[in-house]
Image 1: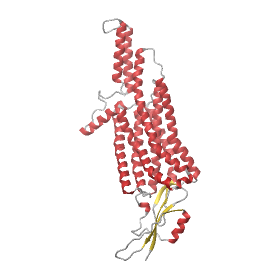
Image 2 (image 1 turned 60 degrees about the vertical axis):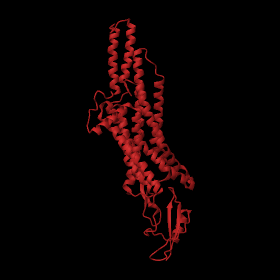
Image 3 (image 1 turned 135 degrees about the vertical axis):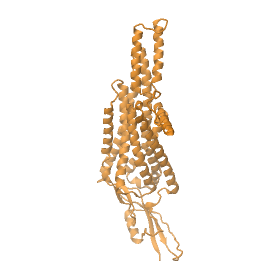
Image 4 (image 1 turned 180 degrees about the vertical axis):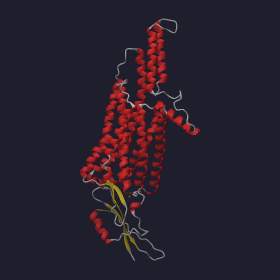
Length: 446
């Protein structure tokens, strides 16, 4: 008995299917030792051509010799191993790094500055990416079919969007907070209540913007006759609604819009730092110089974090824009080959942003380095030491108050003619200014 079989897979496309089919001629020589003689015809077929082919040949996916292409490894065994190792690496680093950030800030009251509180919220969003984006994106890259059911299809897609939105909005909040703190040094510090309100608004916006994904993401048959495999995809009422939602909610509100606000904030910060008029009083001038230098170090760190975020997600957003608006060009074989080649790299790069931030904190911020070392020693010694011991770095606002009180006191003594040494008054004033600068530098650390 001779049997004609086909092995087909569908190409990219939301509104029509292109099929790549292998026509297989199965001819068993005997019941004991069957052989498979294949005539492989590779063709790009439209849906109507595929229907005609389906009527002429028999597809039996229960036959052990026929492999359902929906469950084949998308990138082969070597590609699957490389992807698994790459995703495992950023999962482990992101998990340990972001948990360490949360513990360091939560354990030490000296670390609870407004910026660090927002960094903790960013760590929570990165942990959400770690648990929801990484495993499911890896599975989606391994198999063409979705194997986790409709519940995970909806919730995972939704929460992935929420986590990315919360991350970029937290970065925007940090930039605004730093901009206000630099522009209004005395009154620009936010309170704990204001911080909680801002964080609540960030997560409410993230949950609201991505809400449509709970309804439009669903399962549909992969389209291969005889195969029960399904894919997780968006089903919008119309192509126009899909395009407008992507442009406004995804591209603008979750990427371009926040980056524009962040850029404006950093232009204002740069102008304030570069063109700030120095006070006439020498002592206050030097105090402002050192204190602003400490602030600038924090601002540089946050700026690097933001640039890293923008670069990490840029390739994936570029691919999304091309797929949404390329039209019939998306069905070109060479274009599809390029997309399938760079898509897993772009997805990995976006997900890797969740593990990069703790590394940046460790390299660029002395407080976090000290906190990470303290946490490591506590874990190794199995002891919960005092995180707020005197050797711990002081918080910036507490140090500022301490230095200002010292300056006011010592200035009072100098103005009233009190001197601690011999010599003309102006010599003591100069000696006082130098010692005060050293004192400030010893307390104001990045």
